[in-house]
Image 1 (tube, rainbow, N blue to C red):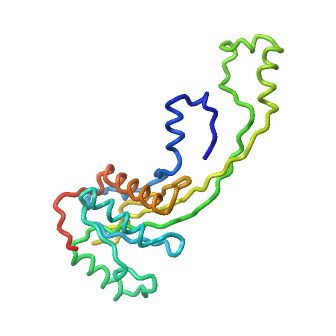
Image 2 (image 1 turned 90 degrees about the vertical axis):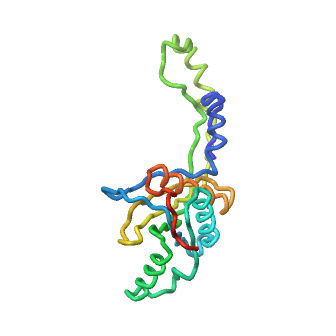
Image 3 (image 1 turned 30 degrees about the vertical axis):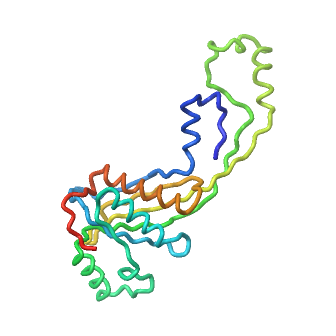
Length: 220
Protein backbone atom coordinates (compact mmCIF):
# COMPACT_ATOMS: atom_id res chain seq x y z
CA UNK A 1 0.00 0.00 0.00
CA UNK A 2 1.27 3.45 -0.86
CA UNK A 3 1.74 5.92 1.97
CA UNK A 4 0.35 9.42 1.35
CA UNK A 5 0.73 12.41 3.72
CA UNK A 6 -2.63 12.81 5.40
CA UNK A 7 -2.53 16.58 5.06
CA UNK A 8 -2.87 16.11 1.31
CA UNK A 9 -5.91 13.93 1.21
CA UNK A 10 -8.15 15.05 4.07
CA UNK A 11 -10.98 12.97 5.50
CA UNK A 12 -12.43 11.86 2.16
CA UNK A 13 -8.99 10.90 0.95
CA UNK A 14 -8.37 8.84 4.08
CA UNK A 15 -11.46 6.77 3.36
CA UNK A 16 -10.38 6.29 -0.26
CA UNK A 17 -6.89 5.34 0.86
CA UNK A 18 -8.15 2.73 3.31
CA UNK A 19 -10.35 1.12 0.66
CA UNK A 20 -7.99 1.42 -2.32
CA UNK A 21 -6.24 -1.90 -1.74
CA UNK A 22 -7.91 -5.30 -1.70
CA UNK A 23 -10.29 -4.24 -4.49
CA UNK A 24 -10.57 -4.88 -8.20
CA UNK A 25 -10.93 -2.42 -11.06
CA UNK A 26 -11.26 -2.79 -14.81
CA UNK A 27 -8.24 -1.23 -16.53
CA UNK A 28 -9.20 -1.93 -20.16
CA UNK A 29 -12.11 -3.51 -22.01
CA UNK A 30 -13.37 -4.40 -25.47
CA UNK A 31 -16.84 -4.87 -26.91
CA UNK A 32 -17.51 -6.36 -30.34
CA UNK A 33 -18.72 -3.81 -32.92
CA UNK A 34 -22.49 -3.64 -33.41
CA UNK A 35 -23.06 -5.81 -30.36
CA UNK A 36 -26.79 -5.89 -29.62
CA UNK A 37 -27.46 -9.43 -28.38
CA UNK A 38 -28.17 -9.75 -24.67
CA UNK A 39 -27.18 -12.82 -22.66
CA UNK A 40 -28.74 -14.38 -19.58
CA UNK A 41 -27.64 -18.02 -19.39
CA UNK A 42 -23.92 -18.14 -18.75
CA UNK A 43 -21.46 -21.00 -18.55
CA UNK A 44 -18.27 -20.25 -16.62
CA UNK A 45 -14.83 -21.64 -17.44
CA UNK A 46 -11.72 -20.88 -15.44
CA UNK A 47 -8.36 -21.18 -17.21
CA UNK A 48 -5.81 -20.64 -14.49
CA UNK A 49 -4.12 -24.01 -14.04
CA UNK A 50 -2.21 -24.34 -10.78
CA UNK A 51 -1.62 -20.59 -10.42
CA UNK A 52 -5.01 -20.08 -8.74
CA UNK A 53 -7.69 -22.29 -7.10
CA UNK A 54 -9.64 -22.63 -10.33
CA UNK A 55 -12.67 -24.56 -9.08
CA UNK A 56 -13.19 -22.20 -6.18
CA UNK A 57 -12.98 -19.17 -8.46
CA UNK A 58 -15.49 -20.74 -10.86
CA UNK A 59 -17.88 -21.36 -7.97
CA UNK A 60 -17.54 -17.76 -6.78
CA UNK A 61 -18.26 -16.43 -10.27
CA UNK A 62 -21.29 -18.71 -10.63
CA UNK A 63 -22.67 -17.61 -7.24
CA UNK A 64 -22.16 -13.95 -8.14
CA UNK A 65 -24.14 -14.43 -11.36
CA UNK A 66 -26.87 -16.35 -9.57
CA UNK A 67 -27.18 -13.65 -6.93
CA UNK A 68 -27.89 -11.22 -9.75
CA UNK A 69 -30.64 -13.50 -11.07
CA UNK A 70 -28.76 -15.19 -13.90
CA UNK A 71 -28.63 -18.89 -14.68
CA UNK A 72 -24.99 -19.94 -14.43
CA UNK A 73 -22.94 -23.11 -14.04
CA UNK A 74 -19.46 -24.55 -14.25
CA UNK A 75 -18.30 -28.17 -14.20
CA UNK A 76 -15.14 -30.08 -14.93
CA UNK A 77 -16.78 -32.51 -17.37
CA UNK A 78 -17.45 -30.02 -20.15
CA UNK A 79 -13.98 -28.50 -20.51
CA UNK A 80 -11.00 -30.70 -19.73
CA UNK A 81 -7.46 -29.26 -20.01
CA UNK A 82 -6.31 -32.67 -21.29
CA UNK A 83 -8.98 -32.82 -23.97
CA UNK A 84 -7.82 -32.97 -27.58
CA UNK A 85 -9.22 -29.96 -29.42
CA UNK A 86 -10.66 -31.85 -32.36
CA UNK A 87 -13.74 -30.95 -34.40
CA UNK A 88 -15.54 -33.88 -32.83
CA UNK A 89 -14.81 -32.78 -29.26
CA UNK A 90 -15.63 -29.16 -30.06
CA UNK A 91 -18.99 -30.26 -31.46
CA UNK A 92 -19.69 -32.29 -28.31
CA UNK A 93 -18.97 -29.31 -26.05
CA UNK A 94 -21.00 -26.91 -28.18
CA UNK A 95 -23.88 -29.38 -28.33
CA UNK A 96 -23.83 -29.82 -24.55
CA UNK A 97 -23.93 -26.08 -23.92
CA UNK A 98 -26.65 -25.54 -26.50
CA UNK A 99 -28.81 -28.39 -25.22
CA UNK A 100 -28.71 -26.89 -21.73
CA UNK A 101 -29.75 -23.48 -23.00
CA UNK A 102 -26.55 -21.56 -22.39
CA UNK A 103 -26.11 -18.63 -24.72
CA UNK A 104 -22.80 -17.24 -23.40
CA UNK A 105 -19.46 -18.64 -22.29
CA UNK A 106 -17.53 -16.61 -19.71
CA UNK A 107 -13.86 -17.45 -19.32
CA UNK A 108 -11.34 -15.99 -16.91
CA UNK A 109 -7.62 -16.39 -16.35
CA UNK A 110 -4.78 -15.01 -14.27
CA UNK A 111 -2.58 -13.13 -16.72
CA UNK A 112 0.21 -11.89 -14.46
CA UNK A 113 1.28 -11.12 -10.91
CA UNK A 114 3.84 -8.42 -10.30
CA UNK A 115 5.38 -6.34 -7.58
CA UNK A 116 5.19 -2.59 -8.03
CA UNK A 117 7.90 -0.64 -6.22
CA UNK A 118 7.36 3.06 -5.51
CA UNK A 119 9.80 5.57 -4.07
CA UNK A 120 8.21 8.15 -1.80
CA UNK A 121 10.24 11.33 -1.57
CA UNK A 122 10.83 12.98 1.75
CA UNK A 123 9.95 16.38 0.29
CA UNK A 124 6.39 17.33 -0.45
CA UNK A 125 5.20 20.25 -2.52
CA UNK A 126 1.53 21.31 -2.34
CA UNK A 127 1.70 22.88 -5.81
CA UNK A 128 3.18 25.98 -7.38
CA UNK A 129 1.35 29.02 -5.99
CA UNK A 130 4.07 31.57 -5.06
CA UNK A 131 1.73 34.37 -4.12
CA UNK A 132 -0.34 32.17 -1.84
CA UNK A 133 2.46 31.29 0.58
CA UNK A 134 4.38 33.83 2.66
CA UNK A 135 7.61 31.84 2.65
CA UNK A 136 8.02 32.63 -1.07
CA UNK A 137 8.54 36.32 -0.28
CA UNK A 138 12.23 36.00 0.60
CA UNK A 139 15.06 33.53 0.33
CA UNK A 140 15.32 32.68 4.02
CA UNK A 141 11.62 32.03 4.33
CA UNK A 142 11.69 29.72 1.35
CA UNK A 143 14.88 27.95 2.48
CA UNK A 144 13.74 27.32 6.04
CA UNK A 145 10.42 25.99 4.80
CA UNK A 146 11.70 23.53 2.21
CA UNK A 147 15.18 22.52 3.38
CA UNK A 148 14.06 20.18 6.20
CA UNK A 149 11.75 18.30 3.85
CA UNK A 150 14.14 18.29 0.89
CA UNK A 151 16.91 16.62 2.87
CA UNK A 152 14.71 14.18 4.72
CA UNK A 153 15.03 10.57 3.67
CA UNK A 154 12.49 8.99 1.37
CA UNK A 155 11.41 5.36 1.45
CA UNK A 156 10.25 2.55 -0.80
CA UNK A 157 6.88 0.82 -0.68
CA UNK A 158 5.80 -2.24 -2.64
CA UNK A 159 2.48 -3.80 -3.49
CA UNK A 160 1.45 -7.01 -5.22
CA UNK A 161 -0.84 -6.56 -8.21
CA UNK A 162 -2.87 -9.41 -9.71
CA UNK A 163 -3.84 -8.98 -13.37
CA UNK A 164 -6.90 -10.97 -14.43
CA UNK A 165 -8.68 -11.29 -17.75
CA UNK A 166 -12.31 -12.13 -18.51
CA UNK A 167 -13.82 -12.93 -21.92
CA UNK A 168 -17.46 -13.44 -22.89
CA UNK A 169 -18.17 -15.54 -25.99
CA UNK A 170 -21.38 -16.17 -27.90
CA UNK A 171 -22.13 -19.91 -27.70
CA UNK A 172 -23.93 -20.05 -31.03
CA UNK A 173 -21.22 -18.35 -33.11
CA UNK A 174 -18.22 -18.96 -30.87
CA UNK A 175 -17.17 -15.34 -31.37
CA UNK A 176 -15.81 -12.93 -28.77
CA UNK A 177 -18.44 -10.50 -27.50
CA UNK A 178 -16.63 -8.72 -24.67
CA UNK A 179 -13.22 -8.80 -22.99
CA UNK A 180 -11.66 -7.00 -20.04
CA UNK A 181 -8.43 -6.80 -18.10
CA UNK A 182 -8.53 -6.06 -14.38
CA UNK A 183 -6.09 -5.49 -11.58
CA UNK A 184 -6.42 -6.23 -7.89
CA UNK A 185 -3.97 -4.70 -5.44
CA UNK A 186 -2.88 -6.61 -2.35
CA UNK A 187 -5.84 -9.01 -2.00
CA UNK A 188 -6.07 -10.46 1.50
CA UNK A 189 -6.58 -13.97 0.14
CA UNK A 190 -7.48 -15.96 -2.96
CA UNK A 191 -11.08 -15.93 -1.76
CA UNK A 192 -11.08 -12.15 -1.53
CA UNK A 193 -9.52 -11.86 -4.98
CA UNK A 194 -12.15 -14.22 -6.41
CA UNK A 195 -15.07 -12.34 -4.86
CA UNK A 196 -13.84 -8.91 -5.89
CA UNK A 197 -13.02 -10.07 -9.41
CA UNK A 198 -16.38 -11.82 -9.88
CA UNK A 199 -18.37 -8.85 -8.59
CA UNK A 200 -16.45 -6.40 -10.77
CA UNK A 201 -16.86 -8.50 -13.93
CA UNK A 202 -20.56 -9.21 -13.42
CA UNK A 203 -21.34 -5.60 -12.55
CA UNK A 204 -19.45 -4.37 -15.61
CA UNK A 205 -21.27 -6.77 -17.95
CA UNK A 206 -24.62 -5.78 -16.47
CA UNK A 207 -23.84 -2.05 -16.60
CA UNK A 208 -22.85 -2.37 -20.25
CA UNK A 209 -26.17 -4.09 -20.98
CA UNK A 210 -24.47 -7.22 -22.32
CA UNK A 211 -26.08 -9.53 -19.77
CA UNK A 212 -29.64 -9.27 -18.46
CA UNK A 213 -31.56 -11.78 -16.36
CA UNK A 214 -34.87 -11.87 -18.25
CA UNK A 215 -36.53 -15.10 -19.43
CA UNK A 216 -33.94 -17.55 -18.17
CA UNK A 217 -34.48 -21.02 -19.70
CA UNK A 218 -31.19 -22.87 -19.15
CA UNK A 219 -31.36 -26.22 -17.35
CA UNK A 220 -29.24 -27.19 -14.37
